[in-house]
Image 1 (spheres, rainbow, N blue to C red):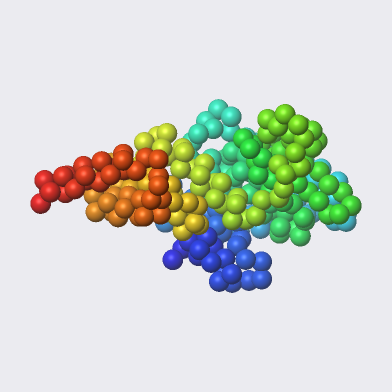
Image 2 (image 1 turned 90 degrees about the vertical axis):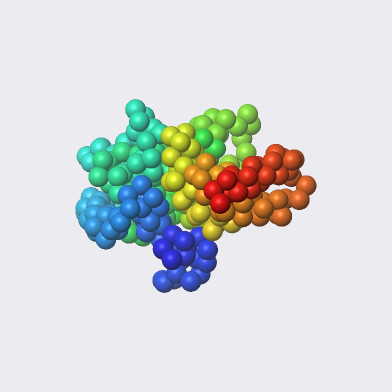
Length: 271
């Protein structure tokens, strides 16, 4: 069982007092795109970057000082930035590529920032805004919302609401995301990217992980239909039957029954 599967299935079984490590989980996720990826060099690179950032911080008790130093070093000096030109490239979701190319999408850049901050014992949290993932620094004395996709700039709560498309301010939108929620959002993003590219094999691998995370019965249907595209009829049948068992009153029950009948005919031809 991979680190990510263990983290999504039973986070309490992971070693260490803090549960899931986002950097380890994100590097495991990256093996979907980069099979056999060794996380060790990338974790060491994160350690080195955090150490160099730490050398630039004048006062570790001053939150504003940290946020400004992180912005100047990570996004200014090193040039980490959002990949607006090739946003839907799956590599943007892979932490190793974020580190290698210094570019990514909002959530992968946020994970990078959070894990650099964790190494320096700085309180940085993910905020699962609709349409755009951001961060919050909050030490109890100083608080700021941060947009890593746009150079680590500080944004106001009002701007967060505008980004989220909220017609009126809703503090629920600014709730902190758990580590599991962050990884699940990364997986959902990656699934959409692979589906757009018609990469059914990798789409299935992402769905495998989402199902481990308990993300809903609908995923069995999605995976079953992909299995059918891939000609894996036995697995398709099992998933579609599981979906119907979990959703006996499903609105698309008739369509799924027809899919199962077609799978039965296809298997019969193979035999």
